[in-house]
Amino acid sequence: MPNERLRAAMAAGCWTYATLAEKVEVDPKSVERWVNLGRTPRRATAMKAAETLGEDVHAIWPSLRQSRPARAVSPELVALYDQRADIPVSAFVDMLAQARERIDVLVYAAVFLHEAYPRLNDLLQERAAEGCAVRIAIGDPDSENVQLRGEEEKFGHGIESRCRLALMHYRSLIGTPGIEVRTHGTTLYNSIYRADDQVMVNAHVWGVNAFAAPVWHLRRSGVGGMFDTYAASFDAVWATATPVEED
Image (cartoon, rainbow, N blue to C red; front, side, top):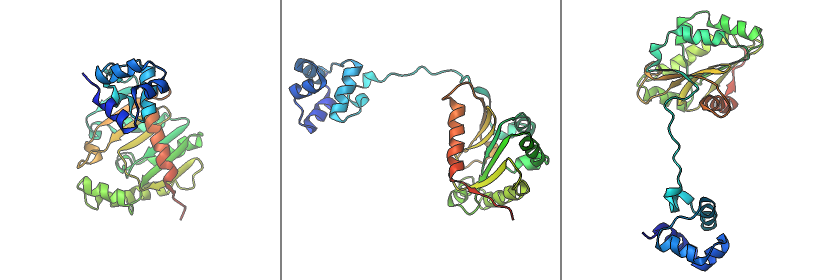
């Protein structure tokens, strides 16, 4: 079966069998067979030809696309919860209490933590006093992205009020050595609660409040895994966030 995608790419660039063959260092008959018989060259040759033509190698030769076998379970996955409401707040608190080096929280508000565990600020101060770096990023209630999230989860102006309430909860920590609080105006696809090499990731689902959305608990098990993806996401948002100053 002819490779019409290859034929079109060659025609668009005025390539002949001979000129492409010379560039890729193969016999012109090989290029002719690629086009007319639909033959697939070796991967290295195909990549060189695709680069020469300015095309995606997999678009020209789909058979070279290697599918990676799916893993039944990620080695970093500790637990998966149907919704945040299924998780006792003690699970979040215990994880934060174990932190020795870093605590990162990226949310819009997450006032449930203070409401269910009034000692949260004390815990964060204790961790900071022991040398743990604590970074808290909460939503800017005046941000269009934050306000849009409120509309999407059908809470109206509720999310803006919760962001202001969250800031009120954390304000007493501002100025504490080792603790920094910032506000952000980004579109969040997940809330992130990190303690050293563990993280709780609360998905954001359109039209659903975070308490009814899934949560996955991850533990880092090497470089480049799911954990590092969320850690890098936090850092990217943190870099754009605005420090909250003392009154």
